[in-house]
Image (cartoon, rainbow, N blue to C red; front, side, top):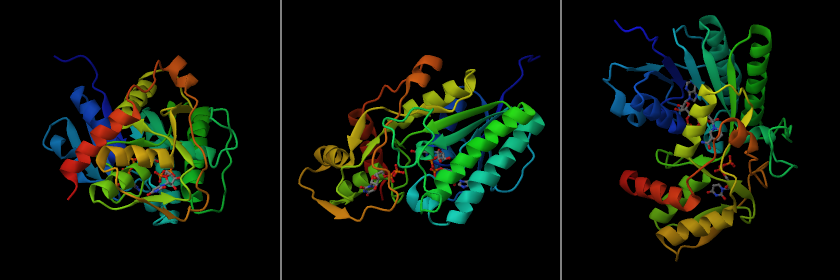
Length: 314
Ligand code: NAD
Ligand code: UDP
């Protein structure tokens, strides 16, 4: 007779980019996984390799509505992440962040599950402190086009900590910095997928503004390792998980061009409002408390991502 209690994982947003990579890791480790998604930006193809496996279940559901499930761990990732998608219906994005997190915290409390929130570096807004440690409280516009997402994630973090203080709910809050890799949607609008798709289609690369704004890009495998360490460890966060190597968008564009076609040109487009000028995580907490740091360089990660797009772009 089996005596060890099985862990049942609920991954909200599991059919999306990060969620599907997390599911691959959990399934490969032999765990039970329930993938919950409304397919707004996720695709069934991302998890199709697990359909039919008795340890895997797929539920079409919207996290803005409550759901009753018996689970031990909730990985709460459901929320569109790319500006194009979260600005498509900003009121829905705010509802997904607030009501979705509220519903998942309610579920965690009811069944005594541990819950990890996929928060974001966007809680720092357009930061006046550089690089950004977790203690920085942020500079966020409450009424701009990014606010539905930024403020949504900020209230989601607040809800987590209030559930922890009021009900003793076991929370983990992860602040994810720009992450990239295979399974990003080609029309996702994020800079790495845009540049790779444009370069593979021999089109000029679209630079918003003059390209001097910076970001720090983490390869998806590194990010998922950090997420799993956070869930399994004793640190509740908030904790930055990202790659601290910082690039201007122009430098990123040149890297992509040099890997695919160095003759391609840049075209400048208007910088969207509230676009943060700089972003780079301080990862000392993750290094000390989780023994985590990224291992994959942008050059290596870009090669893997470009190869995936070459095979999957049609
Ligand atoms: P994604 O858009 O690929 O995945 C989000 C998933 O959530 C999709 O499968 C989508 O269909 C699903 N979803 C959206 N609204 C839902 C709803 N109301 N109910 C149920 N499912 C819903 O994005 P991603 O890059 O995989 O991001 C996953 C999480 O990580 C998000 O919460 C995002 O805010 C966070 N994050 C990602 C990044 C990044 O660089 N990728 C950075 C910071 C934070
Ligand atoms: N960006 C760009 N060209 C594109 C897409 C994005 O220059 O085709 C810029 C964008 O203005 C931002 C940065 O790249 O300054 C990162 O954008 P992304 O949407 O990937 O992430 P976020 O702004 O949420 O960090």
